[in-house]
Length: 430
Image (cartoon, rainbow, N blue to C red; front, side, top):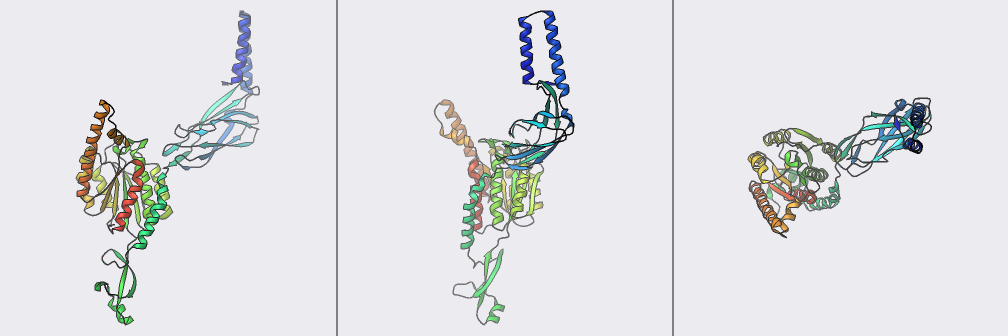
């Protein structure tokens, strides 16, 4: 049983009468009246357990967008239901309104709409639905809480998609300027044309020449069907916060932009999330299906507080990539994790694949480097300078091993990685 705000007001008025006439008879009369009125009102309230609940609405939404959640109520009793219904969700998904005032006649139905605005990526599960039924006087009532299962898959915001039009324009320009007279292994035959001075004699098609009565050469176009394999390190370093979000979130944004760009370029894209085991993978898809599958998979990838199994990751890459590929590894190049995990095994990947290592740098380090306002700030700047030198040393080791390194701030990582992909494509290194 619950007492409403109106019921509390009535109790306060009766308590005032007791204060004005402090006698035992008045006190017992007060208690009797209060208990009787509240009990009668509560008993006359419709049973909240007779309200059937069903869920409906959105099951997926991007971070920061609004999701529409519907709760269907059916009054299975003959009594008129009057009260409030609160559909509770976790604090990471604040809802509006917080509660609904509802009146349902016996046997009728109502649909309540709640708007949720999630602020955190992942799968968000509904909490309990609290149904409070008030009596006809509105003084007291009955209440029950039930779980009505529903979940909301909160997708990454993909804010980096604002860079996609400019990157696609560069891609079209790149493909338009691609030299079609390109000879060698790993190219696709395009067409035949007449020989002109300066053409490579090794491009002459002698059978076509015999048929045409003129010297004909083969022309080539750069291959589109290349393989791009994106690996996201979900281990301990991915959980570290850079700016206002975990390092993993910046890696996810970069993955989505690169996947969208590469699939538009006609390349085959695969995505793997890994720490000590596979946390999610997408392969064998293209176009809109690739982006939908990748976004859905990355929505539920956690940053695990465990050390990444690098040898296991190398074996997994070898198992999943049968062709020479562009392997993009999104991880931290912080000195200690890199020296103990990444660097000893990376050569096993670079021997077979063109490799890019993309890392998020911490904007707080840049802030400390520029602040020498007092003695403490100066010491912090010195520590930040030492840490920066160590990161650069790791990047130099990677570069000497033939690895392309992209080390940028969280907001700059996605476009910088896309630019590096386009540069490698322009150089014919994919």
